[in-house]
Image 1 (cartoon, rainbow, N blue to C red):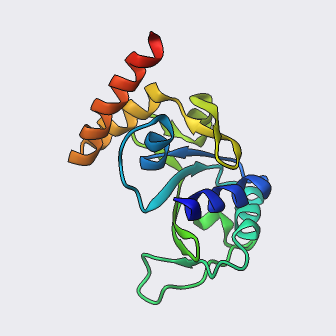
Image 2 (image 1 turned 135 degrees about the vertical axis):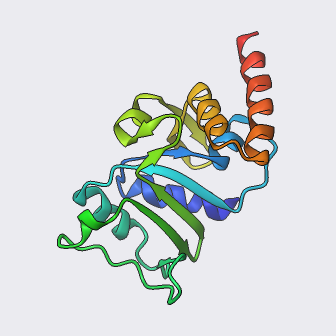
Image 3 (image 1 turned 90 degrees about the vertical axis):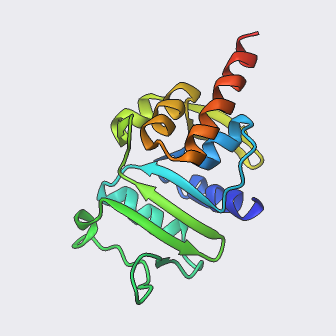
Length: 159
């Protein structure tokens, strides 16, 4: 977990425009899940992708879904080619998504983001309601289990 937080801290310090979504977002709200990666929805405009690459510098970042595990290389020429990035870094796996099922693209996701204080400081996280929608849209067993916990946490917040 400390590695994931270090990864997120680097992105924040690098001024990358992103929102935490997925399992780590659920954990941030108190869901008891074990997650080995962090999913973010980010702005896929060229300048933001270049900041992302810079923030990951020195972490031996590679595309984890390519057979050759090619290094991350973003340039002004190729930056428009990316829709999602599935990366391995020395600090763990990072999935950078251009959209979130059930919510929409980055412009929609950021409308449903809230600032939460994590161990390293404030970070944008998908709101609990939007996270429930996203998890329901994924409809995997682990997501359905997370939805049940998120609903219980939401009820506790109301009190």
